[in-house]
Image 1 (cartoon, rainbow, N blue to C red):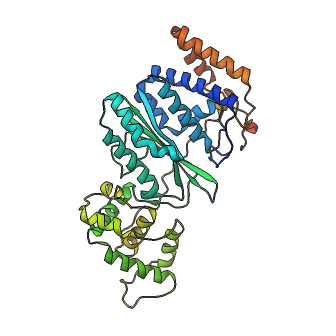
Image 2 (spheres, helix red, strand yellow; image 1 turned 90 degrees about the horizontal axis):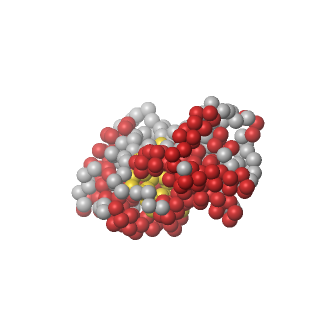
Image 3 (tube, rainbow, N blue to C red; image 1 turned 90 degrees about the vertical axis):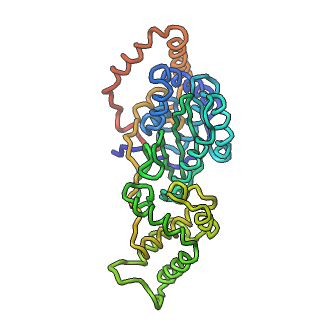
Length: 381
């Protein structure tokens, strides 16, 4: 049995009759979660891929699709703006993600926080998962959650169109953005990934920052020599002999995309006297191809290596929660509107009319804790 959600790319949409119910149930679950755990506790749970996936399953989304991220995060964002729970969300899928800075300013004004600190954090988080960590997934979804005390979480997702798969990145109140910064990463582990934010990459980060201070000229020459080697040529003047298969290493980098330097970005690095890797990642014009080219030069010329370990986590898939109301794609069974309405009605009674009875929910949780679903009903959607 596979014990993770693969998150294959799915098209389609949520039918209106189901979306209406999802919004109501999302609101109720968030009200209960904040009442039970506070806003920081909710952020911690949103940054847990297992809890987030369980939330998705409870409201009736597909248990193993890329839409489990975009739809569920959108439902949560909408509910948080409709309710005053002391926590809001910014961003979203595609074009909505580009509204994140303006929406963060609005949230920061509401909670009397400094917006620029969170806008910078949003940019850094996106840069890390686009540039500093390269696994073949292009980001297309970014949601930033911020509470009134300044605690934050980010859920973003990338897609690999060739493999038709998605990967979800979870962040929570990161103290550093350049050394093992993620709370978790949900997806399938790859054989290798260009990982420049692992704890094994400290020397790499320092050497890179030092190297770009010399300007782009020498780096460009070194890169052209390495490209020539990949084509079968051997420069007259070359580096000291080592037991290294240069062509295989170059091919590994090329499998992640082009090797092209943005000269202006490197000139910015020198002009601004960039002093650390975090500042370097925020440079205007720094993209994945430039970092790949720099990393290749560092590895084969300076013998300084990034990590090639994929940091993805393998969360257990909370498939049992699909039995709450069923799944949009009829796994493990079709969503039945009347049963969904009865669940909503029960929770509304609990939240708004009889809050003293909430201990009942904890008792039900204890009853179902050891329940196991029939394995034959778990199938790809």
